[in-house]
Length: 317
Image (tube, rainbow, N blue to C red; front, top):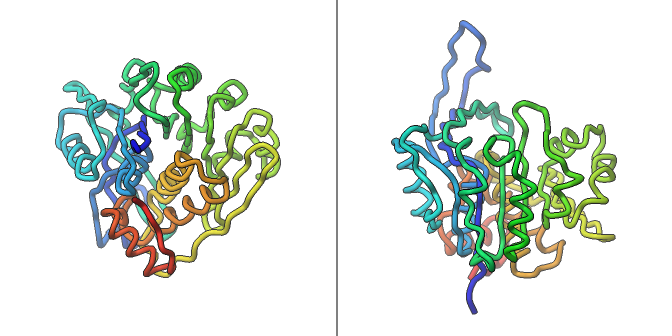
């Protein structure tokens, strides 16, 4: 049986993570961080890398510059067995970078977008029928080249025979210029967190936010951090608790790893509850190592750690 193929479209950047920071930065003052790591960043790349680590046939579509950060990203994706045949390098663009000030389970991010804005609908490989079964898009508001065409991108994906998932992520401009009435009917799995749902719908409660988008939903996978996740599909509504983490390192990329786990099960035809549970498990797994991909080395190590931490036998073959 041929493994289903996942196409991930989105932003590419490195993460520069500062840990053990002695104080929060103030203007005209300097503070010290005792540790710094550089790793593969971006919501889309973390989702793609961890999907590939779990054995999924994964291809990335994005744009980077011809610079050291671009080299680093390509090496990291290819090391994780992500196909980069649709990653474009531009000599007149710089690769994106996010500086992360990490404070335990919270953080402050500053992002330089760079080449992220150069990705457009014309870069996405839409074949009819597509060689890919599923399209995942992330961080729409960081990618001005995609934002205005998102409805057509989703329509093209459906016409090519792909199912779709969308994780908007936070809008740095806080304008939330995403027409969910028009677009969500073409999204098979919508994957916000609680803050994003409230901001998008301009509501002050999760229940109100859900009711606003519910008429346009196919499947909702709502990430709720320590409270687990909530799923809605038609008349079905399921809440699945989070996994306790005793070996917590940081939460960078946990939502992206949730996406990877959920979509892996979704593409296999699993129930909504099973998809949510796998998403929660991979989100928890993410927090046991630094950065978004550190906990996802290879199939054997992932399975071994999940058994050690939670006593769960996981088949990822």
